[in-house]
Structures are given as structure tokens and as C-alpha cells.
Image (cartoon, rainbow, N blue to C red; front, side, top):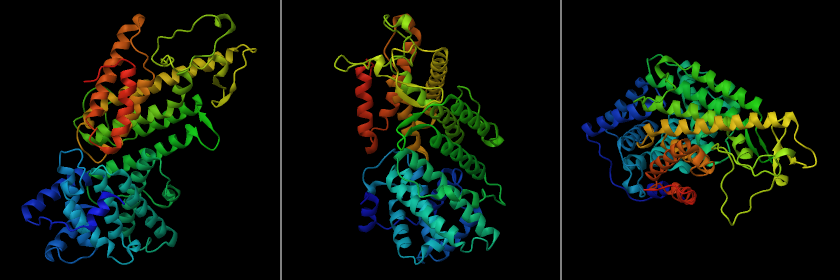
Length: 468
């Protein structure tokens, strides 16, 4: 049982309902939630708040549940602390507990869009609180209820207002579930199977967050395509690294970037953006570029295949994508043990030393090495640009921290120390990695990062990196 579930079941203090304090929480919610994920339009939010105030926050229906979750998210998003181990110490936990208690007592919640909005707001609160698994459980439940409504077609064609409200809920569930599914390696609810039935939402108001929601929805569609196309496939046991596929995926990512609305367009340079949402989109661009090509890094991190002419000559490679340094007690795989890629981009049987490499083999090797280098370059750019948003709490902190860790690990595993023949590039990579490690240790207070960071630090020390 999660700690937030246990907290709800315990006695908790009454929430602060003083008007000045609630006004501050409402503004924080608008800035840190609705500008990212506009679950409802400003008029709907105002209606909920007015109604709850008129009943002195006593009518325990779905509207009051939404209002308490607005206050809870406003409180947790305004707090600067990265993590609170105790649920009692979480900002807004008293509002959260009241809201969950109300929601659990509501009848037939799957047919009530307001109750569905509550489930999404609970997941958002848990993301701010860095409880990703509990957030996934709630967003999956909301996704399942969305699918029930779609299969039953219950009231879906009733009014434009209903369709718009449902569309916001559906696409926010789609986005959040996809992000958590990729990070936590948990099964999908199946919500992606219904995306053709639910148009992207619109608004009769000028909502800043709507542009961002549409950009996120299209981004997650591209991410699904990338993750479903490249990488390790457990069903076949192969790692897919087809250059043509990677090029097509990178083309799709560039198309997504070119079609961003002007309000969210960012420059692909080294300048800070001073806008967390734009900064996150820029990081996502480089993350997708890295993921599209990362399978090429794995085979090229091993000693390369050799031609008969150089088979007797020790291989030395100065590139950062060269073979990883192996500790003395670890055996280095020999060339006859290596799996190589054929022109289709799939792992094949070990190479036969009796058959020398052909021109096609050498061309594939060069192409794969270039693709691997593009992945490592994207990883470096991600680490550089993510610093702008890594040291502050936001709705995407959980995702940013995990991505930052993954790309740091890729670069670290492909770092073989300072090469005397290429000292400048090697020293720059060393400084880059040491800075990334310092940034990640800032998040060591989060439980799910503790073990991962200890592994990262152990590898870094083995490779001679200095840790403050």
C-alpha cells in the first residue's frame, strides 16, 4: 500500500480555508498546472470554485473534490522542496486527503466527467510529490474509465461541451500514461488504441496551456512510434538498429519541431529559454533524437570486426563511441564472439573469421558508427539544455530526472578516460560527465534515485571521474 493511501486512512488536520491563502493556491494551480495540462477551461474552474465557496466547502460532491485538488496541486507546485518522505509533510496533503475521501464515496464515478477530472488531478499531485508509481495507478484507472465511456458511447455525442471536456481528459491521460509507461516499464492500459476516436481538443477561450497540450499530444505520438520501432524486442531477442528506420524517425521528429506553434517555438542553440515549458520541449526533442539512434551505440561499444589485413594489429580507437574500458578481472569479448549487424539492422549470428568482411560490411559499420555518434551528440545536448529545468520542481521533474540519468549513463559507459592523443575532447567529456553527476546527486533525496545513483557513482569512480 502506498504512503499516500495510508495517509488518507489516518486522521489528518483540517485544511486552511482562509480566502487569502486559497487565492494564492488558485494562482499557483493556474501557473503550474493549467498552463501545462489544461484539464478544464478557466470558466469551468471558476464555476467549481464559486460553487464550493457558496456552500462553505461542505457539499461533499465531485465539484468540491475538484476544488480541494485544485488547492492541493496549487500548494505542492508552489513548494520549492524536491521531495518529502512523509506524506504528512507534503504541501497540500490535507486538501488531498479530503478530496480522495470524497471521491471514494461518490457513486458510479466512471460516468461522471468531474470525477474523472479528479482522478487525473490526483495523478498530477502525485507526480509533483515524486510518487510516480502511485501516479501511474491513478492515471491508469482514469484511462480505463475513459475507455469504458468510449466503448459504451455513453453521452459522448451529447454536447460539444461534453466532447471538449472528455477530449481534454483523454489526451492528458494519454500523455501522462505514455510518459510513465516509458519510465516505469509498466503495461499500457490500451488507451492508445482509441486515439483515432477522440479528436484533439479545442477551446473557445484563449488558453495558453492549449497550445502546449497539443504540442505534448503530438510529441507523445512520435515517442510511441520511436519506442515501438527501435530498441530491444523481447519477443524476438533482437536489438533493432536499422539506419533507414532511424533516419525516418529523425525526419518525423524534425517535422514535429517545424510544426510547433509560434508561442512554443524554441531555438536549437545553447541559449537559455527562461521558459520551463519551452525548455522541456527542447529537451524532449533531443531525447527523441537520442532514443531513435541509441541501439547503434551498443554494438559499436564493443571491439569492431577486423579485416584479415589488420587482424594481427591491436585496435585502438580515439572516439568516445569506441570500446569501453574493461577492468582487469573482466574478460573482453573476442572478435569471433561478437554479434554483428547485417544490412537489415538486426543482430545476426557471430561472424565467421573464415569469411573476410565485404565492402557492404565495412559500409554498414561506418554508417552505424555515424548513427551512434549522432545519439551521443544528442545525449550531450540534452544534458546541457536540461540543466535549466533540472534544479527546480515542475510537473515534468520525474521524467526529466530519469531521462537525464539515462543519457548520463550512456555517455559514461562510452567514456574510456583521457586519451593523450585527443586530450581536449576527452577532458571536455570528463567535465561534462562530472557536471552531470553533480546535478543528479541534487536529486539523491528521492528514494527511487538512490540505488540508481549509487551505480552511476560507482562506474564513474572506476573510470577515474572526480566527484565532489
